[in-house]
Every structure is written in structure tokens, then in C-alpha cells.
Length: 84
Length: 217
Image (cartoon, rainbow over all chains, first blue to last red; front, side, top):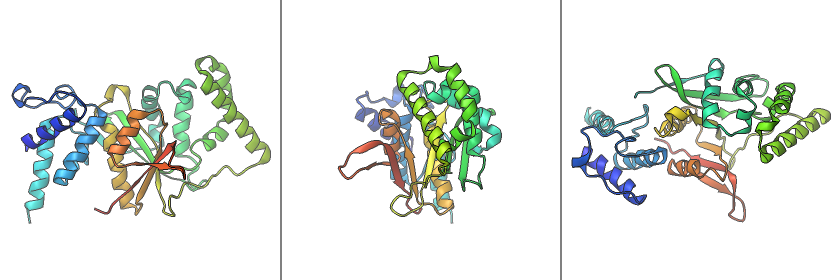
């Protein structure tokens, strides 16, 4: 899950001419602003891309500030979909 | 950092003004002062039945402080009604603070004053019909603003998404907003969120209206 999120993050960075981030060089729970370097536009793109890929609106219940928070939301949404 | 999103109303007009003052630091309304900004937001929740408004507002709070807010719905007479209701106060503030305006703002202030006088003299109806795009009721987003201290965190996007949830719940399937053509950063974000420019017959965007069709979930 985190790998998918970070891959999407790197795609967005790549498209805007920024260097891709190496997972090994990031802190354990990267902050989207201070560690990833995302601004409002990047966050909007990230939201839309992740929703397109997973069907989950990570901003639906509020702001997410770290990669871990995104992963938790996506995992919770997957779990509720698979629970009868 | 966690944020609580909840409905807000006229009681939070002062907090909305606080956010506005930092989010739109160079706007004409800001230059008229905190009192004018507060009155503007109070107006949006006033005379609801008289002007057949439908106004909804959401605030994003961090530790009890308003970090961002949005007002949407059918906010009739958002500008002209505010000007009429506060004509004397705004005239006084414009005179007292004229030195803060740039030339464009002074021209706009003068034009607004002249138009208002014309309406009063002719007793023109204050209401204009809301834009009903392609025959379908559309919610307008009057404002979305984030306090400077909370910029860049995606609060605007969160609020825009919540507006869509609220609109769907009320059977409204189109949302529109207006944005200055020069505000490229906001325009890009709106486009990412699915808003499209409304263009004229020649294909030109007047730098104003954007709309989004909401799909059923």
C-alpha cells in the first residue's frame, strides 16, 4: 500500500520536474508537506489520482498530512469493502 | 495536525473575517478593514427568506481555531445586497482608507458606488437570478479560504470535496464558482478537482465561471 502511495507521489513529482524520492532516504512516516514537498495543487492531484486508482477519497473525512494516514485510510476502506 | 470540519454560521463571521484577512490580504474588502469583512460574512446569513437564499458554510478547525472555511449554496445578492445594506458604512470606510487602495480598486469602488446609487434612485430590484447552467440548478461556491498559517495543507480541497457531498445529499448535481483569470494557482487546483472553464461562443474563457457536474456515487 505504501509503495503504491509513494509511487503515485513520485509520479506527481516527476510530472512537475522534481526529482523522484527514494524511500530509503525518507523518514518512517513522511509528512506530505515538509518531507515530500507537496503544496495544495500537489495534494489535489494526489487525492484525485488515489481516488481514481482505489475508489477512495482520502480527503473525504478531513485532511491527511502523512503517508501513513493515507495508508490507514485506504486500508480501512478496503477492509470495509471486503467485510460482508 | 488534525482538523475538525463542521457546519458554521453567522456566529463564526468574526472567525471567517480573520481567515479572510490573511487569505485575501490585498483584496479591496480586506483594505476596508476587519469590520467590513465581518459585516460581509454576517450579510451572507442575513435576510435568508427575503432574498430566497440557501446558504451553507463549513469550517475547518484546528484546536478550536478556524483554519479554513467555505460558503456555498445559493447565496443571492452576496455582493450587491451587502453593498446596499452597508452603503453608509462602506462609503465612510472607503473615504477613510482610500490611501490603501490601488488604482484598479479605487475604480472598482467608484463604479460600485455609482451602480448602487443608480439602483437606489431607480429603485431597481436588488436580486439577480442565479446562474442556472444548462437548465439545471447549480450550487455556487461563494468563497473558499484558508488562513495563511494553514496554507498548503489541502484544506481547500477537503472543503471542496465536502461541498460535493452536501450538494449530492440535497439533489444538486452541478457546482459553479468564479475565479479571476489571473489566479492561476487556484484555477489549476479547480481543474484538478474536475471543474471546467465555461467558455463563450468563440471558445474564450472570460476568466470567471467554472463548473463541475457531479456524478452519482
